[in-house]
Image 1 (cartoon, rainbow, N blue to C red):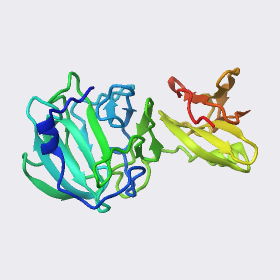
Image 2: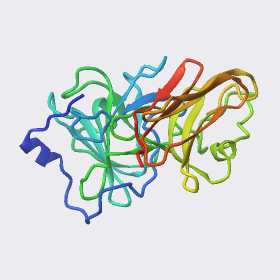
Image 3: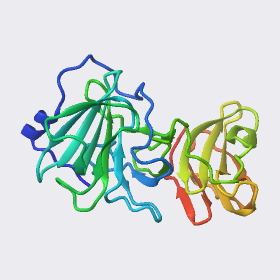
Image 4: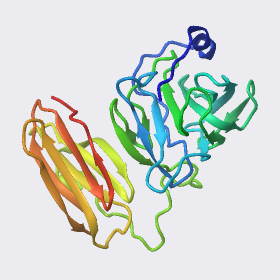
Length: 296
């Protein structure tokens, strides 16, 4: 949804002055703003989303987002606001220990009244998803900002970086009772492989996208200029089920590995020095396809 802020309102929304900090990746590590195990799409719309780099979280599969609990993605102090039927509507800003801040907008309800504040830990409930303010449908508008107020236009949540123009499914590991990942399905073994093991020596993960039942990964080998894609399962591990991985250098044909696999699809390797690549994969009916990106 486009977020149009009147100049006076924009000034009112800015927090008090904070120490200068360069734009870019934030020092605080963020988890998804939803309950443990919940999967929603994170949309980094481009162009036209204002402010650029903010995420709109929306429905994914059978997970409807309206009324969902919204949780702090990292610890800090939460400040509660209400812009009425304009702009963010009901919204919360959490200021973190490094001076950075996150914003959560269009909330149906908040944990405190407007003007209030409270200390929060990572995973503390701060509100519920709604459609207040300048919103035409239920979703959560989410921002990561530096201490100076600059947007991180490629925010990372739960280890998934969502670049401008991307839409990725992210499974939450927030508020999982002290564990770093959602509890696995009963009697389902963990995947014994990592993306680096599958692709081989010299490959490093440079991007990933969450799927229902696993994730797909893009890796790069600086030594030979090759990319590699692998899709790892986290559900039905050890049992054969449909999965795929693909890699397409711009201007070249797409290479795909698909079938019924126990642990992973791939590896799919292609040379793409100084070329943009399109990549992705699927597990069952859940799939991801990137734009052409990671050029050069």
